[in-house]
Image (cartoon, rainbow, N blue to C red; front, top):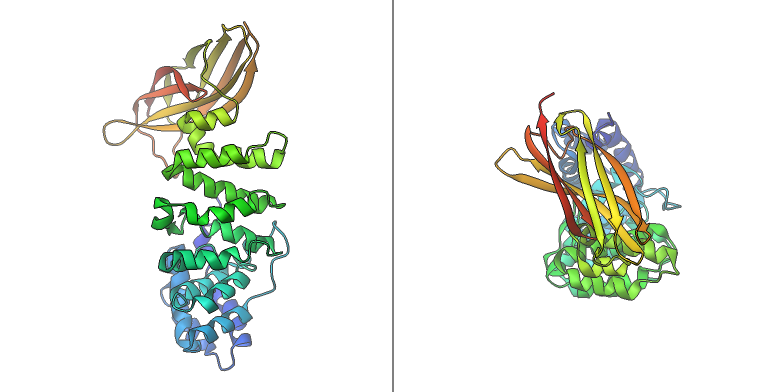
Length: 369
């Protein structure tokens, strides 16, 4: 089993950080910082460890926030050199956390500092308090760096302004109205770096959760079937709407209503024990006189601990079926506990979706192993 991320921030790493800070800040109280940083550290989860270490640094930094920011930046290593090296040192995270905590009132210093820090460790979380404090003013500054030569900076401009950044908290103003950040996406969706374009796709996917029609309009304008990079971006950006069966999103990808499609569903076995798997068999027939483009997904309706079922959609395949043609497909589904989902015995269901439309549903019984 992979080691928990929180364990990457430990007493040994605190000592390394202390040495870096001591080398960059004359008179830095190494022993005092280490004692405070390690006190109670092991009992904390990942983000709490980051905040704890940032708080332990605070008494030992210059009381002037802009000066302290310069000290922290000086303690960091050289910029990352490629998109394969995207995280830098985990012990840089507390430095950025200190900046986001103490730099909101000094944006003229904080934003250029974060621009340089994100070249070493992503500042996507650290910029968000500034966006909440002064949305348009912060975005105006960020837009000035859209042509910055470092890919980590360009990616930060999109990632840091996402309305629903995981672990970063939501930007409520951008959830209500995402248009202030749209010029950033327009400038970066054709960026030469996949790392940057992937962030743009995730940003547009965030927008689609609150403003689906706007996201579809943007995707439609960007869509270019002759540009593989952009088509990949649009498909990734629309993934949530595709799973939800949004007609506009499906139409962009060429999937209209599945008129003329007949579908038969069979589950084998119909009684499954926790920890085992079963087969989903689907037979597709095109009864129309034209070729059908079919985007096939399936949903498992899981039994919840409380009464009712919880639906989870999974991607399956994309196929084209000739007029009068048939297609037989099988998908194996394992029923086991995972970190985000506990299984409970009882009736479960499988639903087949073709071009976003529900085509068939079958039940199976889940039993304790």
